[in-house]
Image (cartoon, rainbow, N blue to C red):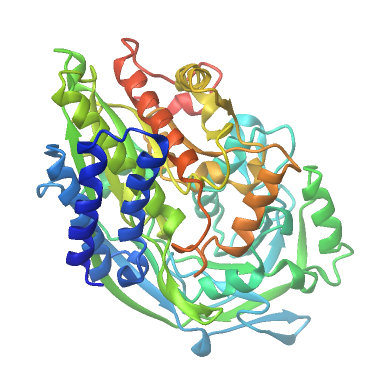
Length: 546
């Protein structure tokens, strides 16, 4: 079915639900799902950043913003163009091997390891390997895997394993893997990094990790404002330094540790127990030839706003956001090549649209929030939160006017809504608002029970954390070992970043509607709070507030 026909059909479907006053959870769930049906239809071909299908999805969302009477908040109407450098690693023209005492041992790309496509790669590299444990750089917390008096890291490739010691908070460990690690490697003269995920922290098997590596990577193109961004928000700065980067299959990782007196199994057991890891030379070098194809692409973020009612507070903004992009077309899984991204994140985009519609309807009745609401749909989340990072460093509203960010990314209404796991919950005064609204809706609000999955830094709210804005992201919660937990783990294993994240999967539409009601009420509560949201004194991330 052509997109225009889909939009016309769904406009027809959505109209009677509102006009007829069918204000039930089931009706609201169907209205939400109708957006997902458009955005995750096979004709959208997975909404790859910069593709014509992504632009069709953007046109659909902008059409909805206009129909709700929202004002444009981009730089070109509702659009904020973002420019990207695109890089694809050509695996069959690249090679990887280990040099052990002068003998080369070839590695198989896709089986043993993958080469990162998102960051600039050197064409060739031959450098010694050093294991530095978790590879966390947190001198403020008196923890630094790069402080190795007896081992020089200059000219070396560091090998790191996912995780961190138990006495470091989960968000802090996740943060240490982003900008601080990049800076620490540059300061130490490191020329490459090999990351080893732990099976415990992997959302799906290695085969899907390897197929994902065939996708093109992206990074933000150089921008005249890069220097100013780096000065104001160092964590959001562009980094165009060429650095060798690979991910090693944990099932093959013993190859890296052979002959050192240590085993990967030993390191894995320590990591799973969140215990300290040793640091040592691996007594071998890694050699690589990396062949890439590069290009450029432009893809927009979308921004719409509803003006607040308070004469003073209406100049401040609360963000309601999700990402619009997904993975496009990729390696076949069960004979399918389109990765529809129904839950990831057409579901979140649909909630942004339904939340925008609700606020608009309330405003028409004379019930406006005190602060203004900024509705954002980001591009290039799947390429490393790039769209949100660009917006956070190049806001289309006055700098400093954004006071809170509420983000959605595959919130997963797979079962009845009883509990929400919230990223960033313990960091700011938004915790109090979330718990109060949750209690009113009969929902338990809890923090992240599995911090080593690094979810804190894998959703768009993190871009605003780095910009000093109190921010939350949330998903349906569960109790360990419960049927809900098993359903969630099964979804990750079978559907996450897969062709099976489609319109045929089971979804609890009533639970989705109940979540949307909670989410709108939370946004309203934050917008109406006369106190400005802020990070708690106990939060590490308070230092980013301006």
